[in-house]
Length: 475
Image (tube, rainbow, N blue to C red; front, side):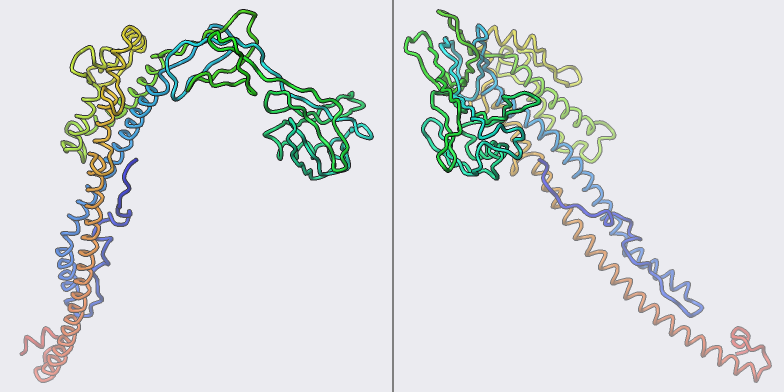
């Protein structure tokens, strides 16, 4: 996953003019406009570093966005490598059967081999059907087979107390399934006709076996009319004459090998179960890996050429390109131990493709060579190389992308602090200059008033027009 980082809000990347209050004041002298220009120029000059800092921040945020985009596609590529490892560990083997008497599936811990099994009996589940009660139950939501709400259910001699919400047959079914669902499954069955229904409680044991099912109310009344014992399933493995019994039709024949008993074997017949490598499953996993690889190649392509963006020519791009090259052209020292030898190739644009037919044919022809080339995440081969390469990209502390993302995030935080401090400095300068210029303007205005008064006074004695200009000329 991409590393979280600190970025400036949208307001932080606005122009300097919007970051600072307009440098204006209300002047009263004839020089107010000139003083306003002085104030604006001084604030503008002081704000020049902010413009550069904002440009730097914008560039850092673009770099961060690009890194996060790359992180996303390379994380997906890393996950596809892990899926390959999983497929090689648990999905490489598959099971086939010689007939439909049984089905088989493989899981973790399974190993290649051949087994035979003969199903002597599928077994049966014990069942029971309640009696009709004092009157046939035509509405199971309001009528029941007993007026009680407490019962004792017995399955194979093991008693369980059952408490129903009411005396209705429907509530009894609900209570049994909720309170003894691991032992029996309760249902409603109509043994009457559509016009004259007669609902009964039907019980079936969850496990195979001969344990009888019984149900009594709190008064000791037996509520079961028919109880049919079941039987255990039995089968023979690899010709051993002594049968194996089971209370379920799903058995574990070998570590990681699960077999479902589906039908009884014909007399003298047995089913062969073969567990073997199925390289078609792994070919599919390699196709998914190729898709993730190509997405990473496409994502990297935008950082080459004249319009390579914020990461053009960076060490990150060079490092990631090297990782992709090593993944796509893997060879364990010889052409025979390469991906290309098994149908995994790159075209002239760097796109990976998997020829599944060639892949499975080459793997089937020499399984040991293929498995040696494949290896695992810890024991060599392609999977160890791919795992190490992806860790070099995505490791939280040392990965190419993670280290760079953290570095850019720290630079963004520092740049935000710088902008905030410079903004405060310019604001303070503006405040101080505005106060000083306002004071100067007031002083000038007072002097203008005094000049006007003096020139007017002299004008009275000289006969000149009472204006500041004429008065000064007279003087």
